[in-house]
Length: 475
Image (cartoon, rainbow, N blue to C red; front, side, top):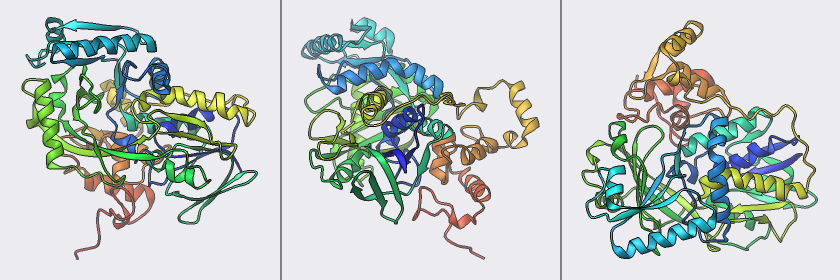
């Protein structure tokens, strides 16, 4: 019997699990995928929003501003790369400059610090590549960037290091709600828990329906992205947004914490399983990027991808105990700025909602600090040589584009939460994220996965069952 079961291994579920692990509780995470962070969190823009966009008085506004203030310390404790690069909402007309004034006023009412409207000259000083058609911008100094899957993996890994249990390939298929909750997976697994937290993203409506809660509806929007090589990472220093319209924020141009340049996303209503990229969608991203800036180096594109973002018909976060069953907590409809809000949402869910159902006592052995996944690349040559003396595998480069070593890949395969497939290694180490996108290193990574897990190479997958890298022998 668990005290709390969290359903959904995304950034919100991970943050809640980590917060729960700071108390003396028996807790678990149920994830339907082969790994954590394989749903909407993995295809997130990675923007730490300042908080001026959300309507005053909404949960989005409240948790965005709180989460933004918490993020530097949160990322530092988890060993996650974070940069306070600031953001710019760019105006291309006098009418849009008026909208920027409204955004600034909204941001001030939300509690955002460091907002400033700048003119064309100041904008060009900050961003030399900006379009000459831009007339000004709203500068949000508290805006930042972070890696969404690095943050999610680190949160869950830290929780596991502090006693949490992870169940993967656990797609919740049935819930019996009595004095406690009996949770069944589609493949016959069973978990029993006193409290359930529904953080299932685009699957959260299905999960809530299993206990008879039909109070909200979840839809999906596909966002297509283009990623440019590190050579182009310095093209923009800030995160660049268009002035929002009724249709949304539109595409952005942003550096990433790993030195790349990110363009996108689109926003198309789709089925949740539709993560295809399209010629029309990717061309629209390129066209809009060229409206924002001059000479966008799209010749340096190394990959494109898409993710489906869940949104709710309530048009705000839903963070509350279900009115159908005590102890069942919905944490759903967490669209943008959900990533920014994650640490603040976690504190609220645990300390303000779960605490009313179960006694919380501090875990005296809790250690909230996690060694960075990318620690080796940050070391001096002397420090690297000392590690290589102890473990020669750190002296063997596997991914030449990103300079990732065998030792780092083995570490990703053995530390919480363990990678089990090619994409899992990629998210944890960046092996395969460089210019060749795994063209050279993938066979070596697959071989390491097979050796560490004691399986044959034909059992190694890209991202779970049905994506095997090798299907049979040729001789």
